[in-house]
Image (tube, rainbow, N blue to C red; front, side, top):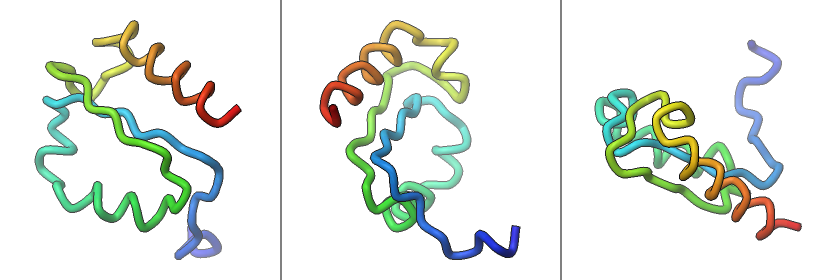
Length: 74
């Protein structure tokens, strides 16, 4: 992974997480680091009640967020 050290993700991006995602809850600084690593981050969506597998737990809400994101960058 050394060739990728320090590189930023530059395409438009959307971060979707669940409010009960243990990874997010136990690593609260990761969201701040995300903004540094993804300079074209267009938004962050937190889906209430969903956990780490947010796309399976709240498929309709994830799909809506993705469609809204795609429309916003088109």
